[in-house]
Image (spheres, rainbow, N blue to C red):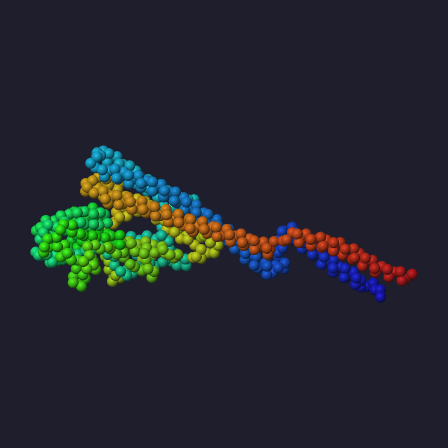
Length: 513
């Protein structure tokens, strides 16, 4: 049949030509953009996953830039600390030279003091001026802010890292489990033939953390004289002695000045004992026979010992067992890294009320991952390295700092010479050097073990995510050009067929003659 009102072949040709043109446009679009997915209808599921991957890629790119910037901040900080370390080394050399008072003049010591003053001022100046892009690095602005620290319990608190995410403050609670102890040996004065008095000449070898000395006490000397003789050698041995309860008949306690396992005491008799008065009669009493009445110096548990070692304080910090070192406890975890110097009274009393204080803010927070979470953030506290904060040394219950070495200070060259003891001044400088060295090491460990490894990990993730995104979203040019050629041929043939279909209706005119 031949009809002219409806040209069905033409309609069919038009439909196929439209689809061929759409296919042609699709291939041209993909080849021009280089993407297989340009809109949701191209691949709905693929679009969803690739958008998520693209978001991850963008987050990782920014995280890598964050870590690189953090590394630059730490490198700048360490560079300034290196200069502080050099200045401290020069101060130490000047102090050692000044201690040689028998071979230098007052004018030479004055010149040394001027150099020390200048070096200390330079350290404080570096603390105030070290910056990165306007960010002060060493003036304490990157240190943590602490609240509620009770100096009767905690002499010094240093927080190196704390996570304050989703919290206004972080509570730190310290619970002493076992007391810190000095090395201690006890002699029973009542065991002597004449209570409280030596009945024969006695030569003792006294050994402590600082060294060994040999001292001889004559027959008839009281135990008070023995105590005085031991204490005159404290600087050489690191030991001290006192009468138990202040009574020569009660005996003597020999103890190390410092607390902890590094502190020990050893007392031995060297000369041959005489009958009736042997060193073996100086038994160091057990706790059961002689209960502790010295107020904080526990009895040795040795039966016939001639040496004893101290004990580090054992404590819980926020429920975690802390590492003890003498009177100092420290913890190092993802949420909290702190070092606390406990007071003697608190560290030696397990029954004392727990110490509590709060970290209320501060610190340098580095976002080192693509997601904002505590696991992908690094919080670091960088304390002030001004001379008034460096070199803290506890002496007679008072903290001394590097600034005390300046002219007119308690530990200046002349002040140390007047008391004929440069030990405290030297300890302050050594403590300051240790603090700077440890801070540099801590920052270096963060840069090496946290930042650099994190960059490498994220670079690997960036590569893999980019490859995954490309496999789903990018166009395969070989395939697209092949399909483009097919679409072009079909579009061309479709146009020709449509023309033929339109001509077919005109053939009906032949029937009219």
